Length: 471
Image (cartoon, rainbow, N blue to C red; front, side, top):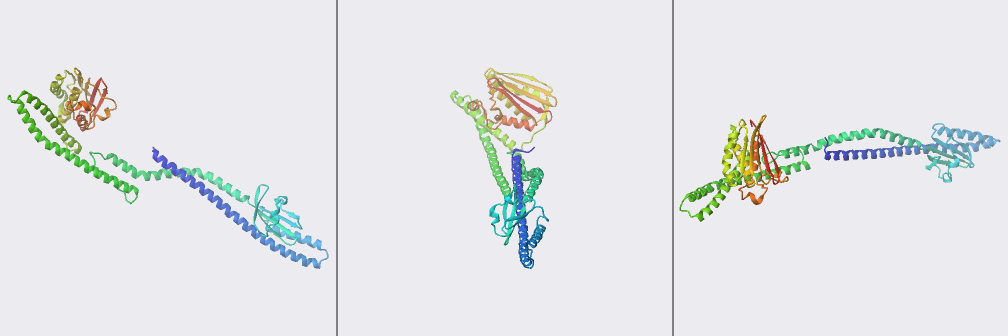
């Protein structure tokens, strides 16, 4: 299929070729007409010179003969006939395109079949000998010249219709050749466009493969020093800078997460020890509980950042073990019961005990815990959470449905992005980091599965995970 950009190039290329063909034909036609007209004028002028010499010869011969002969009229008549015969031998006897008019004492004594002396304007009779003029007689164009002596005047002309016939034949040939030229230009346009845009396709395909997880790839630089090579070099340089920036950011997040884990662990242990001490005042315990929650939040954040770093660098080694999902879900729901009871949320289960997969138990546990934890935290007070597990052919389907606030349709495409939170004002209070669903999606993809969400505002959301039995 030809893209719109290709179609534009081919169209412009074809239009340009058609214009060049039309202009080329016009130029060739005009040049051919000019050359032919020049040849006609040259031929006409050469004929004029022959006729002019004949006039001089015959007039001198007439005078010498008339002196010796008593009957001048008879001699003149014979010489005129001979003269006209010689003129015709140079002109209309040889070529029917000639017109010839012979005058003696302004009376016409010979006219060729095409000659119409009445249509010859006065300025032609007054023209200089040998001057080439152009005139139209009965809608036909002629090149005309004249020659005269004492009492003989000759009009010579040559029809220019041959030029018009030539141009007409050239136009017919052009109309026959033009469609083939257009077709050929389209074919050439397609070939030239494909070859020219091949490097663009290479850039596009390579750029499409480059992502935050694949910044090592570079666009191959073709030979040469044109604008495309400069563009590719600039893009590769930009990718180099992006890769360096990503590496530095990942290293910082990893180092920061590692650095804060130890002090957080120490703080958490000391505060828990203080809280377990009976001598600790009640007013201090309240503040320590609040501090402990914040420490636990930061600790959870650091753990998730480390996991995110593993996701980005593909350093995570996925284990492969047999998992009975029904047993795993019962354990998770039992642990989540503490959170749900505080909010008076009822969790129901519909589990297929035969549903089993092969995967990383730790990651699958984190996946299911995140989804069930979200269903509880973002639910209404006194709401419900339905957990279902069933086997479908070679896949296992897990559905977690809640009766919470729901998610607006425009927000759904973004909920799996890192640090994205639908309700910014409430997520922090509920311990959300904006990383949970991003991690869930990564875990599902790591196991070659699919995660989907269906949500209605004020009615609730349903997260559906489909995992192959053997990832």
